[in-house]
Image (cartoon, rainbow, N blue to C red):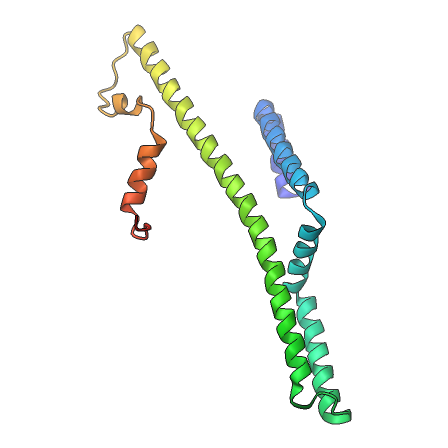
Length: 181
């Protein structure tokens, strides 16, 4: 049993409701990934495959063998490529195509990353909204029970809704790399 499996079984025993929520969330994330995988076109599958392969040591070894063989045969056996012009052209074309495949994969990954960032932002905004509502409810319950605020001067400010547009504007204003308008 791996450490994570042991921790998971321990969590299920101690906190079964929390474990159910975590399992539900993990299943939802897994299903989302599978759906994204199924929705990829053949071109995106190909670009991702080529990108993964080009980033492997197998790719490096094959190129060492390929270039070593080309140079050895060209210099020692038959001079079929004087000045290595054909090899240079092949390598240049390969670099162009690899660049395109990598850009296609990166664009797709960037879109997925943006989607996840937007989901994170939405969840954070929802968390903030819920926390503000809970704070308002707890303050009302404390007032009804005759419990003092414990002298927290920030409590009233914390009860106010956060306006995302104002926060974003303030962040942009203070960023040193902000784009000129």
